[in-house]
Length: 168
Ligand code: FEO
Image 1 (cartoon, rainbow, N blue to C red):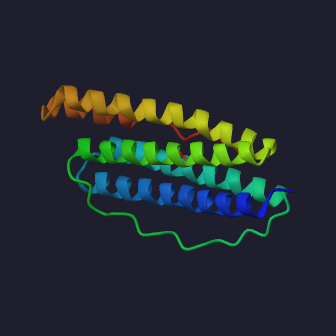
Image 2: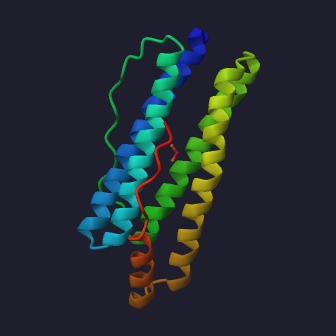
């Protein structure tokens, strides 16, 4: 059994993961609208991945005997600017998520809640990969600037992202 405070904190994280999914779907819709269909694919796969993150927390809470009460998911933005701005927004979002997960890990350690701490370490490791992947995309976009051919190449590459493997 986990503490009331830890349950509350994980409910919040569950909602944040669903918001992440929603945000990536909004980014995907925006990229499809501005004809960056490869980026739209990449972001849609990320939407799928974020839903799995939410489900991973949901499953853990159920396993721990919690009564999960789902909250409203905030509305994400619908305009993101240039393609580089989309991925900058993604990186800023992931950095904020990392900070939340680090705080949650601190809380789990303080409570000597090692089961939750273990769960959270999976997420902390995942964040390293996510920040690094988005960082690489940003570097490439900065490199090509407004060059149409370069942007097309990057968009093609983003279009090859396959569906994520199930993590739950
Ligand atoms: Fe659920 Fe993008 O980390």
